[in-house]
Image 1 (cartoon, rainbow, N blue to C red):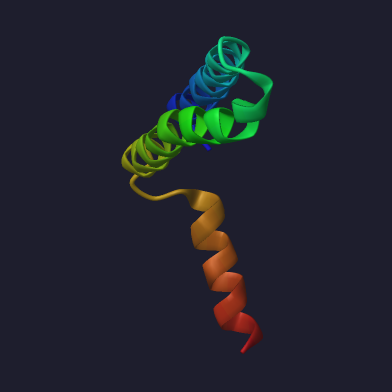
Image 2: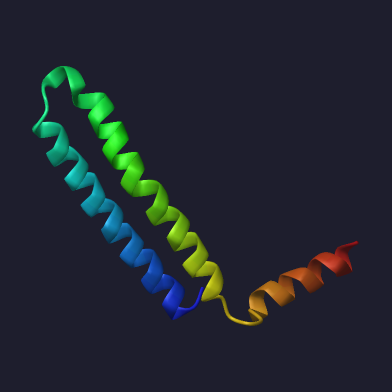
Length: 80
C-alpha cells in the first residue's frame, strides 16, 4: 500500500466515525421506539457511498506494478 492509499484509509475511517456520530445524533432527536430504524437508515445511507468511493479511490491510487504482488505471483507460479 502506498502513501496515498494509506491516507485514503485514514480519511475514510474519520468519515465513518463522523457518520456514526451524526447517525447517533439523529437517533437522539427521535422517540426511543424509532431508535434502531432511524439509526440503520441514516447510517447505511451515509456509510455505503463512503465505502464504495473509498474502494474505488484505493484501486485508482494503486501503483502501476507493486513489486510485492509480482514476487508473490512469481512464487505461486514456481510452486505449481
